[in-house]
Length: 420
Figure: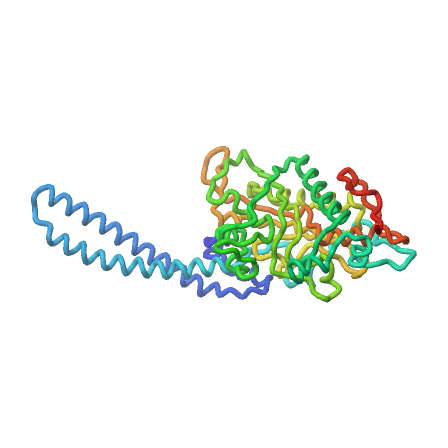
């Protein structure tokens, strides 16, 4: 949620920043609503003060044995007036909150305007593999090597689901173990959160109300679309000690999303589905530390991809391609030879205080003073459903086998994946 005082004091700045996302917010209308809301709140507080004063006067008269009928009548009339004023304030408060809830985060000043066509490549690492043979795509490789069963996955759960089998399941689990082990050794606390979350968790993360219809509902709960949704709400309503920051968490969860694979080349196999595995990194930092924290998270994601021997690039997202809750995002994208394109395996984002305001997460300065909202950051570390296709395609060999990166072999995956 945006700081309402920023909108009040710098409306043109807020409107210009939102325009970078192609969001045309009616800031003048909100300022008029905000003024009416504050005026109504002051009026209600004045009436409540008057009610307390009359109630005290009635008590004094009664203790003195004096008649208080006149004051009783005034109290009754005031009660009716207050009820009407409170009802009006409630209506204005809902409209006020609805407007703020609908606003995305303001992109940082160095984030360019526009959609994904304006994304900026920061750097490319390594070179695309050159094959002296006709390479296979990841779907064919996974089928030939018996790693992924697409047909039976769809038979069990429908389109957009698959089953990892045999060495494919071992490779998937090795990736997750490797990521978790690496992050834990770097000082991140391992968390296994619930997969079913409450509405408040989705609101804190900034996914609700805008994306409330894009999650799987289970009664009054929803299945988490990413562990970020749980970790963003881990300290909801708390005031943290500044000396404890940064708090660094790593979580593993399946992710459940209402998006499915299609027949397009870019959607085939495990590239896009309703359920996939991901290791998520999350930090709570002091406001002044979040820029450095984002670069640290980016370095961690890059280190993992580079350690797997993959060609990749880092892209800085334009405002319109950045998630609504985030102020700045870098994507780490791996090369898929069959597509002649890159696929994102990690988004590294800084939400600034946007999620913390929604979740009321503050930090208390070590030297005393007013508590401030923390900054929150997240990064995929990493998502596997697009990483595995890149591993298969980039490390395939002429005989149809696939070489397994050395860092994964300690988890029981063979040096070479072969057809059985």
